[in-house]
Image 1 (cartoon, rainbow, N blue to C red):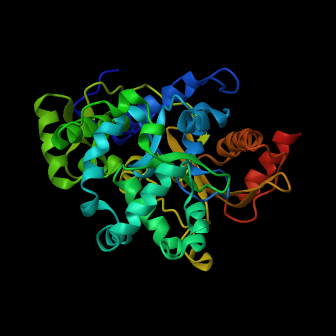
Image 2 (image 1 turned 120 degrees about the horizontal axis):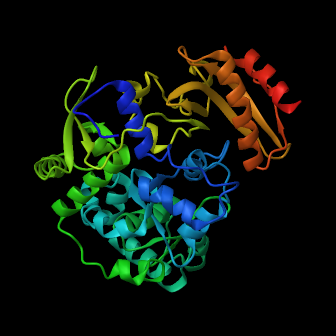
Length: 408
């Protein structure tokens, strides 16, 4: 369906969900083919990473939310085995990004002093000899972790003499500037660093570096395509772009009719749709969505689209949390119907539900039944054999009954 110039919030919501891949046909059975993964990555372009592993590491979840159960080895293969299809860099926070975008991020590597956090910059400016020695270590011994370099320090104190944090900061500076990259991750999620020429495809490294403004324009266009409909803050937030270059890119894309201005009833300020955006008649999703999913990265947009005030509470003291530690919204149709605090007890083989909450506009019976099915699907994907009843929350009772019925 063509996108009109004036949209209701419901229409904007369906456009956004379609752009993010929630209306794409699901694979028959478990997704075991790289083609399924590539289809999602063509829509998203990048996946945010995070070290929290209370349920499943963040970068595995967006694929699950769109494909259902899939082989996590597909993502590991795409990111850390040749031929590489993904590389690690700062896209939207720490991210896995499709390798074809690497040239578009070289401006960020070149401007590291303006964008990298202070510890990295101080190491680079105050201890350049340290940075050079760390680079030499990676060149001579990579792939290598920060701990492996630090472990060697006592053996040559006259030359080294740094603590672990100095080594790590030097490595992260070199990583941010593109002089080294991530070859793989250890089982404890530590990066193994190596030189780009030993990790990235040659055709990517040989691609000419675009002018920064050309890179901004390409990245804004991808943001718009991935979001479907968006206001300026979330277009900029997708790849965390600088204000000046971003605004010029938006103006150019509007002039070229790649971005089409629209009004969304109830939204303040201008909004834009990508010229290829689709407006589906319906969305039939039934899946849990990670706190780090690109659908809900920009929390103000999440509230405007879904009428859901959502915040991650990992860093909130336990007594002050409203919903829980690691809370995932449950997408049912084109609305979020519930939110669950979840934890994988891998030793016991149990999916724990510390809390379950129903959204105000959701139908209790329909949501409970659909969520029980989804929780069994998620538990199976995670290799868990049992689901514990919810411990608290206004939806704990109905969901407990639905889980009993689903297990019968």
